[in-house]
Image (cartoon, rainbow, N blue to C red; front, side, top):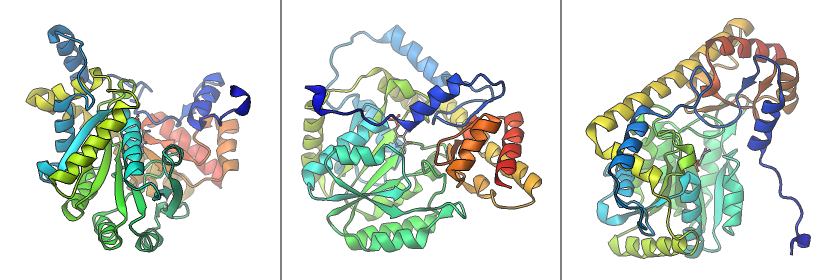
Amino acid sequence: MFETLSKAPQDKIFALMAEIAADDRPGKIDLGIGVYKDDDGNTPIMTAVKKAEERIVSTSKTKTYIGVAGNKGFARAMVDLALDGAVPDDRVRAAQAPGGTGALWVLLTLLKRANPDATVWISDPSWPNHRPMAEQAGFKVEAYPYFDPETGKVRFDDMLAKLDSLGKSDIVLLHGCCHNPTGANLDHDQWHKVIASLKRTGAFPLVDMAYQGFGDGLDEDAYGLRALAAEIDEFVCATSCSKNFGIYRERVGCAIVVGKDAAQADIANSQMLNVIRGAYSQPPDHGAEIVRIILEDADLRAEWKAELEAMRNRMIANRKALADAIRSRSNSTDFDFVAEHRGMFSLLGLKVETVDHLKAENAVYMLDDSRINIAGLADERIQRLADAIVGATR
Ligand code: PMP
């Protein structure tokens, strides 16, 4: 059977993790995998999550099947968190999915049924799983211009020109906020221009919202999605609770579908549930129930929001500290963009040779494309990282 196959490419992030683990130099700096880390390099369980879990353990009475759409209260709360009423309820349907990745997979599979000949457009660059996922769903995949490594900013005119050239057989994958891997995001005005373009061309929006609350705040991070929802009557959105609830391994996400009217939403929903039923039948409940409890309980919700806000502010402080440290050493503003970026990542725009040099000489580890995880830093490491970057790019 397997003689027909050759080895699949290794996932770069997991390969980097193995490389870091094998390095026994003291003081190595790990800017690789995309998980939030505190000053000590740990990814703790949020206190509200712990409390919700305790509640589940002490009060739940059954582990029977929950249904193809998963935890309904969770899905309702996730729709509110993302859309906050931007679309009337009768046009929105949502299903719990195994992580943001699972939600993307459900939605891509649904879109393939709806528009089999479409092309999926992803940003250049994008989260490394976007292309393989869309290809695996059977789509042709193309990239629209997005990031300029010279300036650290969005190549917005080029992006818009490309979007303007698309049509009804195109699906445009947009990052809702906190762009991965670049950290460069659309401002309000740019969102409105993108939305006007999609409206004009009929290209279909698929929004990936994996970091709500990690950028400028829970509502601000949903600005683009809600603005789009107000203008465009059909779209889909994949959300994730991995980062903002810190429940990565529980695999919690939500697939949201918005139809032109209630009848269209029902049809799309029935197809979505059919996709899920034929793949994994139903999602696991534990993580979704944690999120439901937190979002529905005023006290736990406030506690979660405060902790999320502290994580967000720490990432912004790290950004500013790194940009300041590099500026004071190099006397140049070349890396000031790091402070303007939002979310967990920044793409530094370094050459692969420089990335390799930092690894070999300074035990500083980042992805080959020079994406760094800003949450992996703390004060002393920021100063050493700035030394290393300035030394390597002089
Ligand atoms: N989309 C983007 C852009 C991401 O960065 C991630 C997480 N790395 C995801 C989706 C999916 O996250 P998960 O499946 O862990 O919820």
